[in-house]
Image (tube, rainbow, N blue to C red; front, side, top):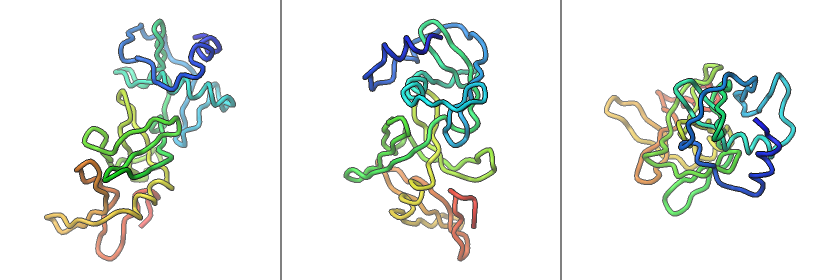
Length: 190
């Protein structure tokens, strides 16, 4: 994979290439890891070129073999400790919430992009959201608290109280209120 040539070809391009249309054979495993905090490392060393990380992030997709970097002629499996993306911004437009990843993927929180609470590798229950091509993003702590500030509550049939937000006509759960304590999904603390 000639990364410098790819960088030159993609300079100034803001869109994700059509990786879902490419079907090259799996070439093997690349010694590349996306850490749980979103940091990219190759052979144990952190990437120092943001443009390269942005390019590689645009070439990711979830395949049956795992998360892969895909070009028209090569496909390499990489290691992802948690989610490959992190939601770093949230803003409300009309009645809908829009979330933005660290690579400027923007999505509306809706039926196709619902929040779900899942466990991180550290065992914390934290919201995540589908982004594209089978890949998800964790909600950063700052964005989580921004959403909690705008949240409302709904009592469920079993008596539990959910805290969440409405967006695109959908209810998106951020956590639960149990008794007098709020279960903080972003930090795992009660």
